[in-house]
Each structure stands twice: as structure tokens, then as C-alpha cells.
Amino acid sequence: MRLQALLLAVGVAVFLTACSSGPTTPEAGSPAFLWNAARQAYRNGDLLKANDRLSELQQSDNEFSPRARIWQIVLAGGIARGYSELADGYESGARINRDNTLVFHKQMIDLRSMAGHVAMDFTQAVHAFVDRDPSADVQLAFDLPPGSAIQPLALRKAYGGILMQDAEAESLETAMVELGVIRAMCRANGTEGDSAQVLEKFKAGEVTTPRATFVYAAVKMLFEVSDIFAANKLDEPQHSKVMWEQALAALHSIPETKETTALATKIQAALKKIPNT
Image (cartoon, rainbow, N blue to C red; front, side, top):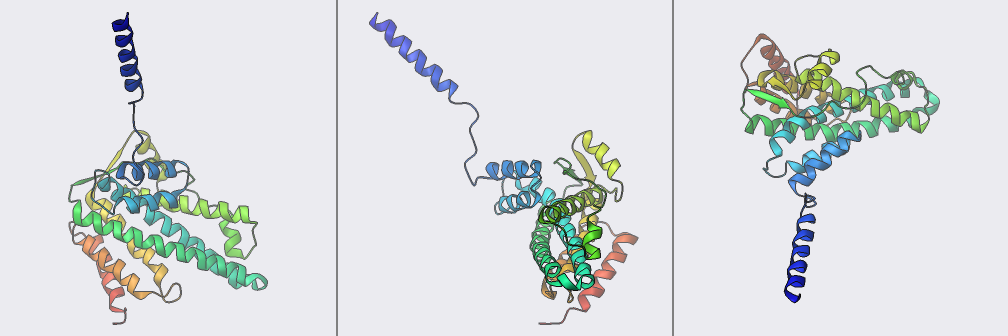
């Protein structure tokens, strides 16, 4: 009886151990933890938080960092563009609504500050990708973002100097960021302006795009987003210079075409206008 009781106790202990040894939660701060956090934030519609987790993930080389670089190029490029466009809207509103100029001006400053921060994340991601990922094809291994590819109607209020309640202004900001990311995904897939086609491809599974298409799209976004650092905006020419130099380096990593040559000429002309410091 004593032996049977002992065997039963051992059996129960083994069973309990087996039950408790299921899938483990990744350790906080680990690459797996950051990757899961980025995916969860993205699903929740918190694209800025997802970008932050992807930036943290790339502080070391790990199994997730190659996918994180590709994802962040699309995500950060789109976020920066969305913030920048909305900031331009509030700048217009500040000129029109003279009674509330300070309100619109503050919105503009805050948005441009955020755009500038994310633009540098974007630039770093492009640098890391060009430096470390020479593969011929690029997998866009992430879901479509929430939101719509149609410009939100409330953007007209910002441009027209119409004051909005906080909730409406926040909703507009979210919509512009989502729109920016959707546009970036279209470009990255070589289907600029055709969100319906991109949607169908993503429904079918992970999307693969030629490296040259992906890099060219990233360079175009670098050049456009760099406008946030212009003299009449954040006035940080050295940040523009960093983005343009990275853009040229990226162009040199793909085959030369009429389009890449024309874009390189524009970037080189812009670089010549940067004062030496």
C-alpha cells in the first residue's frame, strides 16, 4: 500500500509538471517579447507604439530583426508622412483662423515633432536593411493596417481653420497615420495608388515584392518625408542631409533605371543646397 501511494504521488507530480510546462511567455525585453508586443500594438491600432517596439527590437541582431526592418520601413515611413501632411493642414488653419492661431500652431508643432522623430527611425531602418539584406525578394510579413485609403473628410477642417473637439482631432490624427501606412504599403508593393489590389494580395497571404521595387519606394519616401526638416518647418538641415545620403546609398544598391537616375539627380541637387557646418 505504501509503495502504491508513493507511485501515485510521483505520477500526480509528473502530471502536474507536464500540465504546467505549456507555452511559456517570452521574457520581458527579449526579442520574442518585443516582436509580440509590436504585433499586438499593431492589431490594436496603436501604430506609433508598434513602431517603438520595432525600434527596440533592432538594437540587437536576432531572429526577428530582419522582418522588423522591413516592417518598420513601411510603418515608420507611413507614420511620418501621415503626421507631416496633417501638420501642413494645421499650418494652413493657423493662417486662416486668426482668432485661434495659437491652437492650430501648437498642433502643427507637436505633429512635426513626432514626424521628425519617426522619420529618423525610418531612416535607420532603411540603412539597416540596405546594409544587411541583399536578398532578391522582400517579404511583407505583416497584416494590412486598420483604417481607410480614403483621405478623411475632417482634414478639410484642419486646412480650413475650423476648430475641432479633442475627440475629433484625435480621430483625424489616427486616420492620417493609418492612411500614411496604407499608402506606404502600396508603394512598397509597387502598386502606388491601388489599395484595392494590395488588399487582395494580402488576403491571399504574405506578399513578396522585388527588392528593387521595395528599395525604390523607400527612397522616394525618404526624399518626401525629409521635407519635414526644411527651413520653413523644423529647420534641421543636417537631418535632411542624413536622409538624403541614405537615400543615395540605397539607390546605389539596386539596378539603375531611368526612374532611379532622375530621383538621384533630385537628391543630389538638394544635397548641394545644404550649408557646410
